[in-house]
Length: 541
Image 1 (cartoon, rainbow, N blue to C red):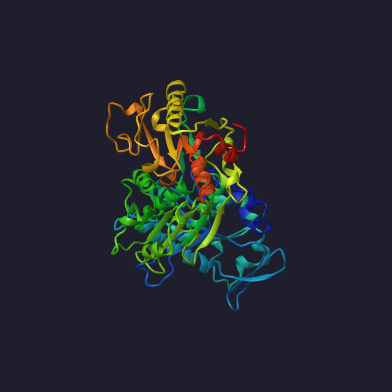
Image 2 (cartoon, one colour):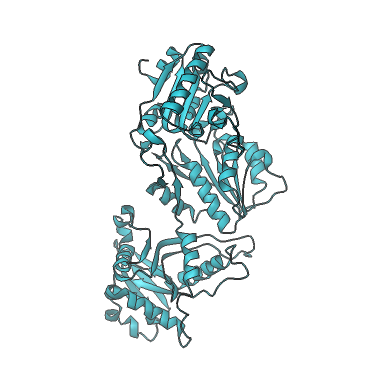
């Protein structure tokens, strides 16, 4: 069986009658090709317009099939009844509803071949030194028998019959593909064995990259020490959707994976040679993005204040896009190539903790929502849902019950926090690096900021470990942030403190609770007054 992307074929494609022809071809390729072959279904790519002189640089095709000894074939699939008029050299197809469509498969394939070849040659690692690329094309009519329609012997047919594959030939699809390669090669010698492997590997990396996130879990709250958390099918569909769109806005709840997807999309654009900026409003999130993207060519993570007025770039990916004002968007877009510039905005309108109240994204964006929470346990999700104005489907494990601890005064809050950190770190064996303490207040107004607790734990806005420095007290240093500054970030365990009447009286209390309670992946502890905990979390304390 060949290496297929995607595999399996999503049900949304299999169950759609309009895709029945592509499904037949997919199944024929899957069952009829050996392990050396690679198959990409619904392949799409975007190219560099900056130096294109107005020529089309984006492309797509139904299938790309490749073999390390033969090269790359682009396949265009045309279902339904197919007719050819040799007098005017025109193809038409009649779909399942009886509607007739004029088609130009050869023109489509020539355009796709040209843009894909240029895309591969423009990859940063190959510029000026691209390997020899064997790339040709064929047309598949899975619902027809060409011999019965005399197309293969029609003297007016301008398309070589050797590059046409009909439904009767799908049972021996590998033989057909080799015939197509032989046709295009003519009298030229075949490629050297394995000569196309490098090109095929680059093709897979570009069109079907493997995306995974290491997600280690600690002791009692972790099922395995090392585990991979893969993007959900919904996120994979979205990344495929993004491959041919230049200006998109993606909305989603806390925990829907927006930041992870923003980083991945920025990485892909940079790897394709686009000069890319990954932008966020809050400094802690920007620092995190800088760490995870460090060393990636063509990619720079920064805050708006770090953006240079004379910096012109090809692609901009914005995380937490709801935080920016119209004036700030104008500042960003002034540095993006007009028309050709690529813009992706990831946002959550529920997390608007800044003073401006209206969402103000740029015009001309295509919108796509994420409706699954893939980060938090179901126990934590149940505490988030009341503060979100749409229905979100939880995908995480059941998880532990959220802890609520009553503490009515600053002294009692510090005492409760001290006991909680001791329990989590000493009893539960959770490293301090996996614990974050959040407060809805500013750190200047908080009773716990920069405090050393009775248990010895030091609450620090920036720990030496975060900066890559060694410290003799690192095992006691716990990160402490305001809720607003921790937006877009996450931690395995979060302790939210100072949940009190001041928070209840804030006009933004719902947005603040939504952000605070959604930061932990695995366990949440909330410390506050009895009245506030009752009002915000519903259960008796």
